[in-house]
Length: 230
Image (cartoon, rainbow, N blue to C red; front, side, top):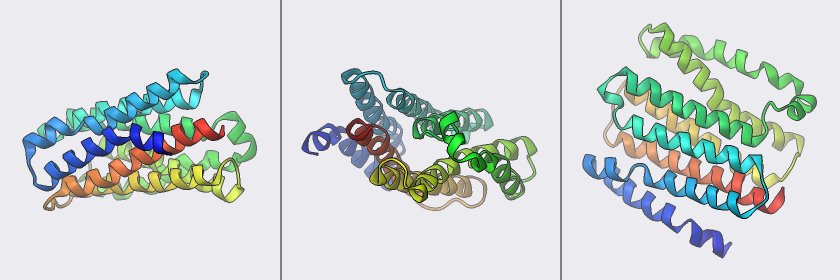
């Protein structure tokens, strides 16, 4: 545990600096420091991947952190127009897809044990579409994209819940993964509400805090704990 604490020091250091800038609403400092916390997690994942025999879980998690980085950069300019917002959202969507794949959700093995979960995506997309359509003021394409994104983000939490109930794999792995996935949901919900409904003071602080908790939590679950257990 001491080793992982030392390895994560750059993440906690850069996260603290970034959150201080965000809390103070220092736009220049926020822009400069935003990518560094997730960049440290990406580099740590690459390190673990290079030190062990090939693991698809590490590879997929590394891709998830990479697309999170791209999304972080694009979201710096999301107020400049829909192209930045949409491409940034697509980057985060891909990050969530790779996190989902790393968790084992909807793989052939998963479906053989939990076939009913294949219905998750169409059900959530149908439920989420109308509320999101109202939130984005009738823009159908954006609402459809938001519904698919919502299904993907919430699916990560759903996958860990299913594994916790079924008693599969490592309990702490699934618990940390679930807490991280819920933190992602909170961050994305705050992002959507403050962007399309009502802005609030220090919005970026309230968005980034659960976002960074989610990222480091998934690193613990999908990389560090997996290296010890699986």
